Length: 146
Image (cartoon, rainbow, N blue to C red):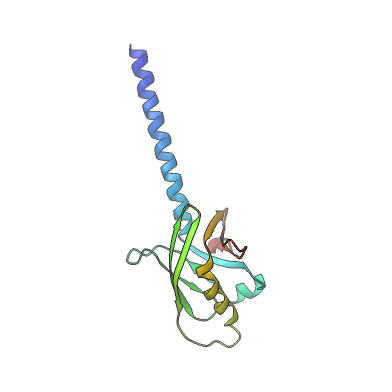
């Protein structure tokens, strides 16, 4: 009888351990998303241009506005709303400040128009890729790995 009780208790502990571990893994995936990402591949822009412009998207969580994020593509501060869920992404309300920066507007204009059309996200290692069904892509690397 004690043997059966021991097996039952061990089974319960194992089940709880596996359950907690899988829950933590899904949370860590979302935590991995919420940080600053440097743009390294986008349309016909070279990596050197993107680095020079310090193009980035900041998905760090803000407790006051949980779905509001920022970006900078070389000139103006940009802002938008985004929702992420199981590989799906929804971007809306894209706006920016209104300065003119000679020679630095092409990326910003293109990015601002393309971001609302991105519908999927994928994290592979230190890279984040935003994409859509048309095959358009934006590839980012974690700020610390740039």
